[in-house]
Length: 417
Ligand SMILES: Cc1cc2nc3c(=O)[nH]c(=O)nc-3n(C[C@H](O)[C@H](O)[C@H](O)COP(=O)(O)O)c2cc1C
Image 1 (cartoon, rainbow, N blue to C red):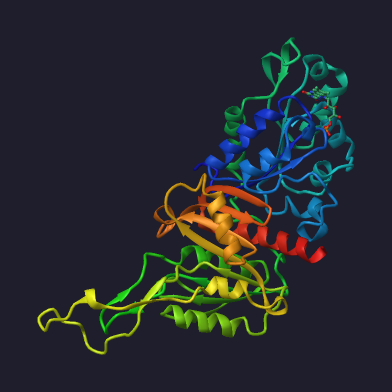
Image 2: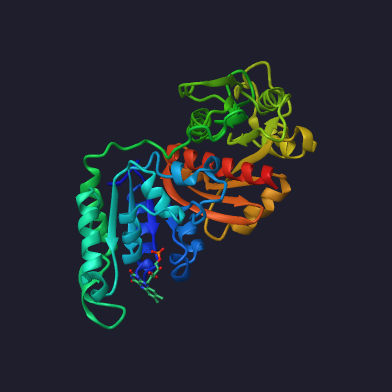
């Protein structure tokens, strides 16, 4: 995890080597970085945005007018990035950088950013050795842009010489060296994404008492829900965290309500959502016990006096998420739920989508209980009305920040329709 905690903007421009950048994204993510891919229009002629979106777990961006990030993606996207890496960098793109042109999202981003910029040029050997390209590269280097490569060898055009993009692992070696002197931002940028919105989050397990000393619960530690609460607060939301019994500190700026049972959690959620509407958000992360004993015994059930847990009668607990999803439109917040599954996430898309619909959630986040409960990282599957996207295993703080970005984007889209 040599890149853990680093957020990178990966610019992909229109050269044949763009296909190698798919592998580059995989390897960056494997090493713990979060990656926002920004593509030029020409790059999209070589590789589709869908590949980069799936590999990075974030929508690959091309359009400066997308309306994302407060309508200012050319300013915001790189704000909290450790740097901007452009691979492959075409001759044309480097010429545009030299001239300070801003005729697309990626070039605007480069001009509007104070973050380090590194480029991995890739082109035909004649294009590379042309005095125009060499002069541009010299100027970029003079201005502090890192120029990594190109390598020498056989080229896609059939010629041999200088101009091949460095291999992903060679680029990563340069990146690791360059990042040694750069402080790791803990999570991607969140500032202002949820300002003026109320967010109600449930987290942790519930505990359903059987008698004064026993109960039924689960192994949820609350880490994911607490990380999301913290990320929402950082994004400027007014956050209420309805928490089952966990041993975690309350995140800064978060209003926490402690509950024990599913019924108490439902009542606290209803209360917290009482003045919420469609511009607010509910995120059900808690692992709510599906069943509870019909009655709690007043005295400890004792074996010696013939008592047995086998005779306990059970009743289903309320489905808090489905209840929120079914609220009338004017009182219904944007509704996000977590589903703890067993097995393999890949191939679970259809079942998760069916569950999302059943619960009337806007987004359902699938995760594998045995691989997520009590762990500091998780692999997720994000299911929206038109999409099912796997998010590779990452630290829960990073997943939480990414989820907040995702929710903010979807809310903004829904509100502009
Ligand atoms: C099939 C094909 C392959 C290309 N490969 C490269 C390349 O490897 N490097 C390069 O600098 N330009 C290459 N070009 C030219 C660029 O795509 C062109 O200059 C484009 O305007 C670059 O746009 P961009 O810099 O905004 O991505 C290629 C063009 C075509 C049609």
